[in-house]
Image 1: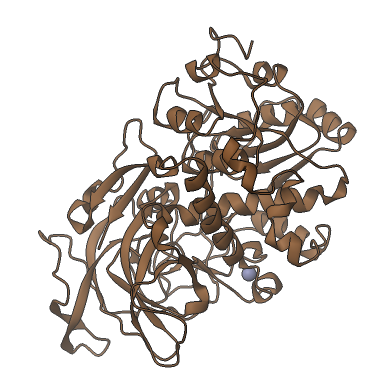
Image 2: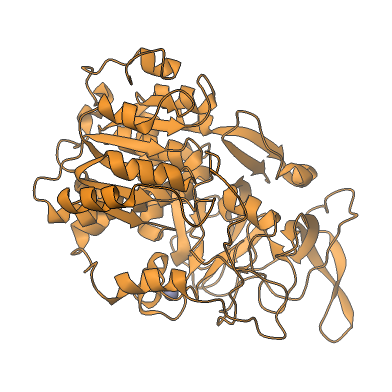
Length: 508
Ligand SMILES: [Zn+2]
């Protein structure tokens, strides 16, 4: 049984079901109403018509057949589902990991990118990082070379497993309407690891390399002409995705892209942040208060969870009495942990389910936020649910399709399960599909996929990092369990960290 210490992780043994769900420090914020009170999108605009054409296009794009790459394209793959930032699988696949995913898909129209192309070269044998401002000859398209300032960067050859190497990029200068951002640290996530494994990733047009990194905290290093409101030293996080031509992208919702023609820093068509500097248009930047410097690197992964919660709340406008109190989070990687904190900050009773037995780094962090941790080695979702009130909301960040189907069965009536992870395993999971369908119909349940995030979700994430720090000082920072030393440790980026949660690279 769920409450029995013999079948659940140790953290759960101390769980008091009658304890208040809202930490005392929450008294100063308004969490008494539905969660939608925290959704800017909800407050500022009507919910989109989820049954409209964009909704159907979202699914269609995931089923589109692969498109042959143009003959001149470098080897490149691209996820069938959008990528950044996916939950890292923390639970094992139930069977073969060989199921096809991320089949080649190119032929897309690429848009301009801020880093000059064709001007960096691999430095696989480089023993030491280039010093800032170093000058190296840069090959130019006409075969001549000039000396220009360069900076080190960590790159891969997309599609080639374990091609991680150091390269060089030209040191950028901000043009009119741009700022120069100095990278302070970069987060490493499951998407980076899959790019390193060669599963996907697309270089900028005309290039063979892709500089990694899509989670970055930086500071303004210079301000170009015609830029107002930014000061050298301001902390910023850059939004990752840039829009393609589809209606959703053009309306400002590139996270709802319908044709996957977008680009993403460090993932698709744009060099990432594992370097020293980048230039950006300020509209794409999100400010991070100086007192969040230590945890601001978590803005991007938290933005993914912010979107998930927003989606759930937008969907649940269908229910006038929606006021969720009980949640499950599947997976205790960065996405699962940040989802746990987010739901706890809204006063929900949260059980986070992962594979490893407690105690471990995630279980300690989860307990620190007043949530409970359960190991599927010791109990089942059915047993967990049997000890809980009806489950209103489930975030899946575990990467296990079988667990998703189990979760669908324990979801309460009128509940929502938000799928945030790409699952591994066979295409057809053994599951009681008739029962699941029946229960979804009779219980008005919803399953929804959610990927990536928009600028508003980044802004919500910054606000909530501040909230987390007020509620649980120092807790969210414990999710950063390994810090690598700039470009000296680049070979260790893909190393697995026992009992680790989040790796960051300290750049500058
Ligand atoms: Zn689009």
